[in-house]
Amino acid sequence: MMIKKTGIFIFGVLAWAAAHSASLIEPTASSLAAAIKDRPIVLLGEVHDNGVQHELRAAALQQLIDAGARPAIAFEQFDRERQSDIDRARLERPRDADYLIQQAGDSKGWRWEFYRPVLQLALDHDLPIIAANLSRRDAFRLTQQGWSAAFDTVTIEARGLDRLPSDLVAEHERAVARGHCDLLPPQALPPMARAQIARDLTLARAIAPYLSRGVVLLAGNGHVRLDVAVPYWLPLTERANVVSIAFLERGASDATPDEFSYYDGVVLTPAVDRPDPCKELATRFKPVR
Image (cartoon, rainbow, N blue to C red; front, side):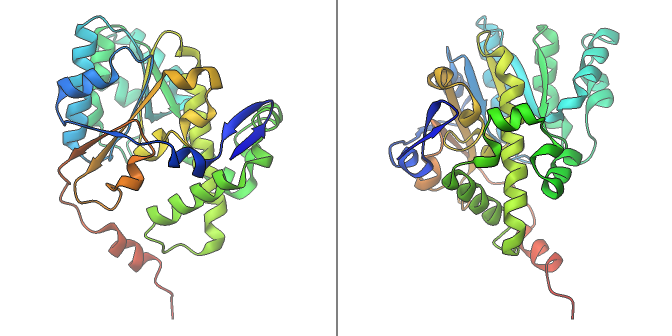
């Protein structure tokens, strides 16, 4: 299935997934480094609170940089409007990762101790640090007001945001539903899927200026999917240069062969001992009587 959109051809979601399969990567720094070596566009997923995964990524990136690689590093954890704060913090205290986090990081929702080693690596080697994400504020406004809350009319038209392929939208809605334990009411899915699509587009636009130099994006696994996420929004000529690696947890519902088809490679790590998020959501969404 092929869909024509704004002058280029884009694979439909289902046809693409059926033709792709990821390789299983040993959970060691050397194996991960080998999997991403010499690839100019590297997308590294994560389960946000899994410290083992963060350690693996940092160690692999250290090996690549020790071998001479000098990519830009893009972070989902920094909102796009914080780029000036990052640049200012680097001028004021050039190698102080803690100061940079204090000046540019959102203290809500991110375990910065997990990201600090990669930030320090970038500072020590004077690599570009990219604030890549759509903010929670803009994402919420977009769910309420539509695409114009986050993008100008030129972007909306050029990217076809008002005429997205139905299979792309449907896949995002399914992902939102699964991510919320299938507890959301149906009417909540379209606006939340729109926000997720907007995040993917924002991340892709953030890394676009660095594609020829080489860039590594650190983001949640959903954002690095090859079929419907960040790579979808990159120039068609650049997609062959992308390598996407998901970090999944053994025994988790997303660590299945079907999920593997969304990536070039998968690293399986032990699961973190955490409360069941579905129980919390079920309590939150329980009807009031």
